[in-house]
Length: 167
Image (cartoon, rainbow, N blue to C red; front, top):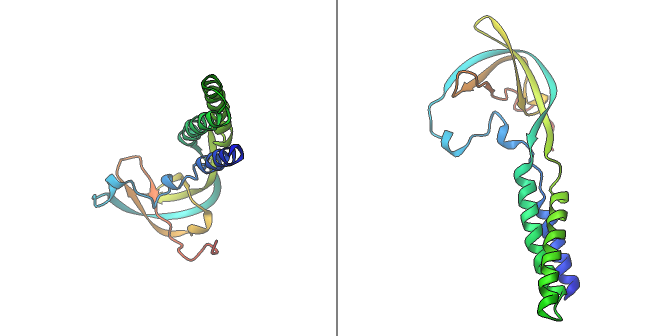
């Protein structure tokens, strides 16, 4: 019984510790509130494309892993300390503390670095640069669509749909 509880706790911690992969920040990912909303569209000319890394916060995943770790650790501690009430209470407290620490460790670093792209583009006879989450193979030089819901937002849409090898 003890081994099953420990294995279950560790398995759940591993699953809870998924890292933020940056998908939320891609130019072609939309929050539910942006769906079916008019957004200004411009055409831009992509001049150059380069690889980049984008730092995305992993704090939410770390906190979730820490919470789940604490809960599962407490449950495992109670199960292990089954001999008496005081052993269960002590086991629960110790298990919660250790589970929380393990969850924090499994949750990964505070910041994840995901693949990004630097896009240098021309708009209105001015040259700009935009860093975005994505891969360079998703873009090519030439015309592209830029969607903006704010004056400073540059969501340049991938314009090379067959440019990346299948993963």
